[in-house]
Length: 139
Image (cartoon, rainbow, N blue to C red):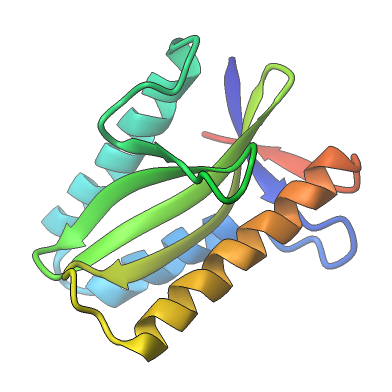
């Protein structure tokens, strides 16, 4: 199995690549953190490609969204990174990335934002199911 980035057919935007670029920019001078984070994400994606199923501590199936999965990692002690993905034939397609607070009591606005981020992932999954997307190889 191979991994690829979802690319919007109309705008040619590659959302997960843009998300990761923004994360790198937000880390600024913390180069070690940036390299470590990117290596962690790459390792997890490659691990998914090698496994026949998505049974892993860093993957969660989103039960309200059939076919949509969440790759889970951490930015720092208070922030989680989520990359939503799906499987299409022999590809793992990275659809959407976002951050969320790492605390059980995050507020209603934060919960609404997470729900919105998942909805974006669902919309991109529909594009994949309808074959209305492009891909960029994961490298």
